[in-house]
Image (tube, rainbow, N blue to C red):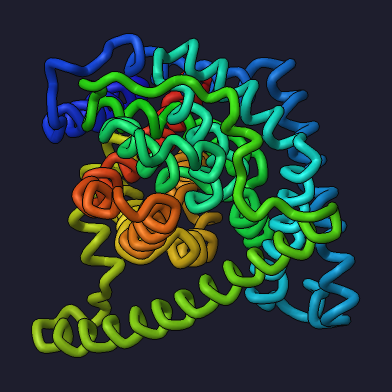
Length: 408
């Protein structure tokens, strides 16, 4: 029964995307079915096939080693404050790790390693799904970097992209999780295997829902030979790359810190007001999280969450969409040990992505900076791209729940 609910949930998510499609007749079955098959196959491979589990274990251990190196830098700067034994300080133990990861990724870009990896995966994705090379490269880049940096891989083509390609780039960016932010989730306590698997599953998921909601009706430009070398402001050397990457990471830390401070405080204020209003009607524990939970509970249920936990799980999904994933993860991790293992897996996957209103403004602004003449198109595509990205994240959670049920 649980398997059928998850399958029904997948159909519901795809059905919603089709209902919102700009041109249902233009939907390419190869792209849609290929992306769905890739998601399911990759999830099954790393979660249940011995070789896949070994690969994931190796990658997880590698990530934890990288976090260990980052912690050395934190210990040098903050001393005992960086040690978990004296208490968990979010901005130090989570956010400042982003600075090191951003510097590391910048160095890998300078050395050409990232371009090689992204080019290989992106090229394979393009051939498998029949998507354009540019949108496939951008989707693949989003596995490792954020929604602002990834489009730089195809910077020369942004101006000439079809609206469908531009929509796919926006959707992929909003559905993704940047390398530095991914480490932040892990530092918070989210299972490293879930985060890594979700990061790879979002690439085909983003393309799946982008091509359902805005299928290709034009002819994409696929001559992408010079894209890898056409990057503005290329660092002078490795040290310059590390320094610029660290500076970019610090900007992310400051931005996320400010947003979290503001949103957590605003949520507390809103909940205080709702509690006062609810008290008039005998509902003293009324909160924004509770309201979102009741509204989205059916959605959580069709994703595979047991009905007894659907309201609580749905509140995390709602927080992620309305506020951001950090706030949602913070609340989720407070009670995760009270939830079933299946619900923990589904929510861990579903929250892993940038699909929220604040990130939409960031994506539009970042792409508009690359190509100001496409600002009107970006604004017009924005809200639909946000919906497509949210559906992509929910699909990853639903597939994770399906695989868990099949294994059980």
